[in-house]
Length: 97
Length: 306
Image (cartoon, rainbow over all chains, first blue to last red; front, side):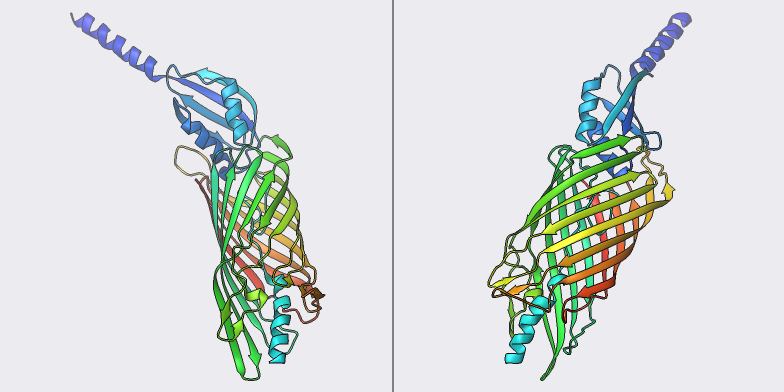
């Protein structure tokens, strides 16, 4: 019985971790030369459904976008979003968390 | 009365070149003129400026002194990633003092000036990691929303003290911006075609402007966005030329000329706000006739992303 409870708890914890984990999109964006301008992209990303957080590394021109489990952002969607903000999407990569 | 009439007519011309325009810039950019940096599609930026102009060096014998306090409110909206629309609504508080045979006279006026609408198009952009270079022509029109027939106890105010020009005045220009995270260069050239209203026409105005900003300090806030705060120091130059005004079709020889300003600037930028300050000093004033010379223009402004 104890083993069963332990297995159930482990299974639950594993599932929770799995469901909590999402995806991180790493966007290489050219033209980001000041924080005031970059806020235009941040606003658009934050408004996008499923986006959990957005962090910037202006020196590298890198934006990390974390989304929840099951949320998928397409390259076309991200390119349009970056274009609308007035910048250039150089490349993107995706990593599962 | 004849002397008074003449002096007011001359004053109308003498102050023409003292009208200063609101600057439209939005991002980390020149304080005293425009920028080519982007406004996101569907997003807006507002800017509130406080300007103070002092002109007290009178080459004539009227010992004139002019002060203008202005509060230009600027709103910008990104129609697309390349097209940006601007609206500039200036509020003025102008005071002129000058000697008369009866003693020192003070005349003043307050209220809404001429509203300007403008559109800017990003014709060329080259983006690289942490830097951008853009060229953007712009065009707009100054509308006669300010009163041009204000009076006080001495009669109708001279043209320069009026809140508006009374005419529809188109303007065109081009601005380029080269910006990296550490430095920024800006250049702008513009021309405003001033038209006649009520038998008076301000001279056309041409401007050539150049700026350089150097980042001197970075602060990384603890919040999650990780967008840093920047402090820039800069120097800006503005060359402003105005042709002679016309009264009833006659050129006023005491109006127009050229002024070259140098301005030290300080600018603090966060992701939501830009606060900046500039002091424009007219280092060269080559004005026509007895046109009143300026002392300085002080600008304090705050921009907000919304």
